[in-house]
Length: 184
Length: 184
Picture 1 (cartoon, each protein chain N blue to C red):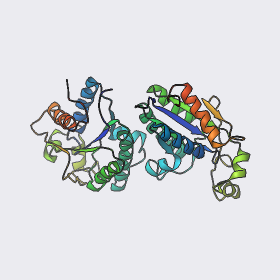
Picture 2: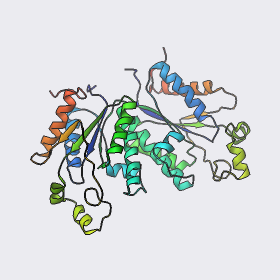
Picture 3: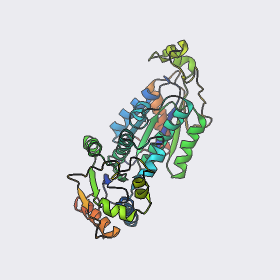
Picture 4: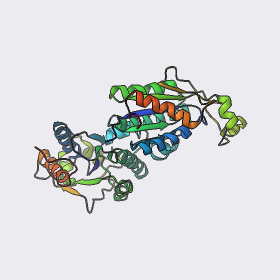
């Protein structure tokens, strides 16, 4: 037994904010510590649970509800989970939180607070350029809203931090809450 | 610790065959023994994962793949799961089995082998009458095929058994495989 508890790390932030990069660091760290972890990122979920859904507000909401349903199932059974979908709408994130509260599961909202300017400047996948040119419709931050969390459990300022430093901030929180054992 | 392992009890059988009734007995028995259990029945899944899907072969297949994805996530993390969807097509059940094998999760196919005649005679929900009259289209066993499992781990003959006796057969298998501890 690794002494961990179940919880959902609900990462939210703009496209390119660093959710997946921080998640990758966390995956390695959990593996090194021998703590199980399931990752429900946007691609995994769209492939396995939400094929056919688009990016309208209604379809995004359905997608997020499905992620929340599965994350809750896992976390309430003692399994640590990271979700890494943009999840731009506050009402649906709050619904996910409420779902976890109802089942006594632990919900940890992690706001990856990279600014739109920084995300657009990096534009590692070239998506912002396509959104600006109109090639991609309904793109969060450009043609679709992103509603910032007001009281996330963790707010990660990535501007002057490496992904390792951002991940360390998350791990410190989890240790302080005794959701994972302190290292060493 | 209750000493259980993770596994997926994949119940399959006609509408009215007794999948849900046997599941209800198992839910009580697991609770009494202090073993956690998640139930992914057809209604739960259609509400939370598959809203909008119909009952065509394609939509049924998508629905079953989603159940398999979630059941596999849970069972490979040590959580016992029961799925109780009709799952009429052999190819998709085998795909679910394959998915579990890939992740080293335990897949136990339970064929609730109640005959069509018995199911139709009971017709507790009045669905067979509606299927015969054409009010319901695409009804398994009437206007849609049910492909029987050839080598299920457990074949439950309900004809002359109570739901408790059927559930006991499942529990004996789980104990023999050391997936749950022997009682008492």
